[in-house]
Image (tube, rainbow, N blue to C red; front, side, top):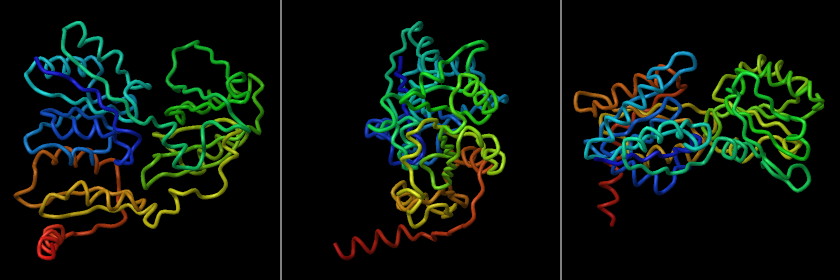
Length: 321
């Protein structure tokens, strides 16, 4: 019997991964990762770890939840360490409850490692505190994917409060309608944060009256966080993340050697949206499928060939040490 760790990867910025999450990724025998998890985290895996993609597109699941549950059972019953890597926090709209129920029934040991959820991460990276003494004394996390007929007291939640709508763009028309029906002011400030904490982050500040118009005008897509509440007024202009020197630049690194996690961080720390691909016959072939999935979803403006630059720098460090 093995053990399954449900690890929250955070909202996107690789440095938001917890120390415990990093340690488990480095020791895992199997890593089962979702579509919205940045594959940059797989650069932490040991050489013989297996990668299993369980990404689920809206209305086009690669692995249905039932199949994911069976996968966790099959891998968890083996003598190995399994990491189920999820975006954000596994316990917040991550369906972790359904998955641990399967493991409990079978007696497979598991642990849940929390991650930084999208609401607090995206809010912080766009300069919006979720609570504020002048504006908000409560925060509510709401998923746009709700059961039919479920009613939410939007008016009460926005009264000196903040609502964070996860993956809310797809249901923006319905959500806006319900907010207005409950007499929430059409002047209520709203922030839409697309790809929060990554170099491709976009923040649009609007209000309920212009919400749908701005989503269409800016062609905003999920994954996006919608924050509703007076606290959005605390943001003024560009914030700290958007002023990073490489913010907004989409950079693909190429090298015949494997690019280190630390090299990737040297770009993300400056605000870049970065990924790396190892080329050549000696490449780590585990990443062939990983790259195929990721590069089919994302485009890059710049390609930088490192040309063994990391090896040269290491040799120089040893020479002068």
